[in-house]
Amino acid sequence: MKLLKVLILMLVTSGSCVVAKPLDPTPADLKFVLYYPQVPPYMYQDETTQKVVGLVPEILQDFFQQQNIAVHYVSDNRTRAEHRLYQGEVDAILLAKEWTQHPEKLLFSEPLLEHKDYLLARHPIAAQAQLPELIKGKTVCTRQYYIYEALEPYFSSNETARVDSSSELTQLKMLLNGRCDFAFINEHVANWLLHHHFPDEALYRSAQGFNAVALTVAFHPRWKPKLAAFNLYLQEQRQQGTIEQWLKFYVTKSRIWN
Image (cartoon, rainbow, N blue to C red; front, side):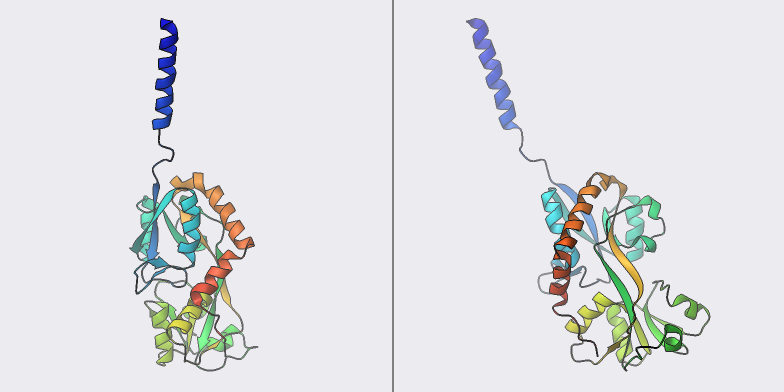
């Protein structure tokens, strides 16, 4: 009888331990870089709420909530953010592999989406004209520190003058003010800017796009255990059209090019 009481006591104690154990682990933290200057419609702070919004936060939110991971946004510029990612001071940034100095030190996700750069001008651009004849002897507004593979040969030979600016918004302002003949801008960023900042301006886009780039999330290697699941999630989002829907939502409407 005494032995039976001991066994019952052991079972009750064991059961109590199981019940007392937390059902969910403590959420992990992931520091994701918000670039400055910001890059709408991908990632930016809403002027009214200061909340980080855009295509990328929408896509990240659902996945990392499922994984019980809290995403925290850390503001930094593009160059310093990449260095901090190598050092492990931040966990992830939006980045194309070909833009990095040491891609072998990072983990890259499947592409979220692809974009191209286009020439924008204040006058119609001949649809059949090739890039060399379009920009020879002209000035092109560009982003400071950016490398444009399609344009570099013409900049290097001084056939075309490069005029740097701090952001895509400044590029368009300079173009509209006549400080350059063309602006060379990411199609999605241009759509957002033209809709939200210059809805009444008549601008024209080249028929051909250049520098096709697949945007990915670059992770510090410590996040390798989550990469396969994240890639599967991105594949599902693309197949369902969710990424394209969020892109259209944040641009609001596609630019009707002149």
